Length: 438
Image (cartoon, rainbow, N blue to C red):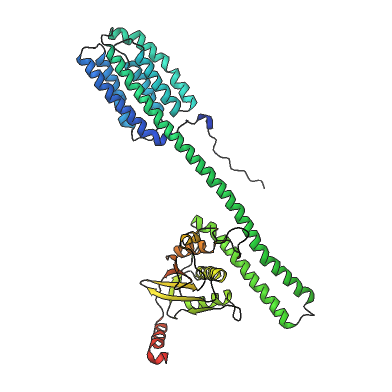
């Protein structure tokens, strides 16, 4: 069965039909410049009308059309082409309507050409330029004979100054936008390079982290398969325990890797329920610090601690924090819990060297480890604390770091409190009483 490959929508004009400057951020500025230009020209032509310059009344009416168009379009999300067409027709007829001097025509042509080239795709610029000759013919054949000869050259020079001012403003804004676009492009390229580097680092770290447990599982499984008849039962049990631990380690790595895209997409499935935290804390502490090992983790979580969260995700959070303490903490690791209003605060603490103040927020970011490069002493993806923060926040809590006293680290997180069963509360009350403690 053949499946059709989805086609991307075709860009009609391609890159060649895009304007040199993104019009969206410049739209209000451009329309404001047009409105200001029209107001100044209205004032100038009003003075000309008061002094008896021929054609000033018609010129004022045409400039009024430009002003109304600018005020209407100043908040509209539309292309700049209609506005420039209005400028070409109305403005082209209005410029020098009462005189035949070339100065204002040249200035106005410079304004239109600058605005068109900077804000329109190449095809639309061609359309705009093609519409110019008919306007010039109408002006030369019909409008100027109706207006009569000019009497005041100052009006033409004033119009020229206004159009050159508008051209300068458009150029300044366009240059600023071009510089900003170049800075954004450079930032995007840098982000793309960093994303590529992170992807390569991620693939390399995942490959390394997966290879270690897989190698151990394969090696010990092959040893048991080939020599189990000759091995002591205690050795077989030891090898099987190693295989089970490495399989758990492998599953934990896969859980962390799979959680990342789901967290980023906001599609992580949670199954919140009310459950006691103490058994979970004991189970994860024994898995991370097996009894009889060099270090053990103590658990000081009362039996009355009931939380409303996803048990599997809480196990993942505790596992990540205890794994972090195992790698970077000292000889003493503990889990504590105390009530904080409507939440329980759970603390995983150790007596290790702690985290420098400058790194206390960075450690919760993805792919961050305090020891970088090939010289780092501990393995890991650098995702444990990042995933911990996202999981805790998804379950309605928060996570943060506190320095221990006098040394060490305290990784704290909160979970919504749930009501403990009545018999559990009574048992806890008896345990806290003097008779119970005795």
